[in-house]
Image (cartoon, rainbow, N blue to C red; front, top):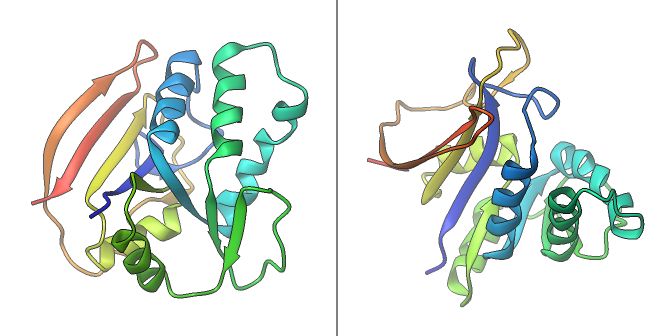
Length: 181
């Protein structure tokens, strides 16, 4: 069965804020490799719309190798977007669904292939509550923002994790690899 990997950036105080992190070349390279090792990434509407930031870099590269390679990887990987409000997606590699996430995950897990990435806070919360995530990759950036959207604010039950590994970046960001105990 394919592995479900939740990968997300957080601040030290546990908030998901894409503007607060320190996305240097090393971190972009890490996420490029993660995307290249997976077959699909699942997004909610909000995160998908934020990822549209990368589309212009496909036609007009920035000149920063790590950013341009990440833009290419995010452009290439198939994306499934969960939304009840979006009517269409303009990204060629994206498809829109209003199906229940557990149904989509069940179907994807039965197919042969590589990892299934979860890249949205809302989907991570839903899948945690359904106990459907095989591995969490939480990249903690050395920043405190003091407010915002906490990652695990709507978890139904106490959940215990086992630390599998860590990866430290020169910026001070650390990815914690966990699985549910």
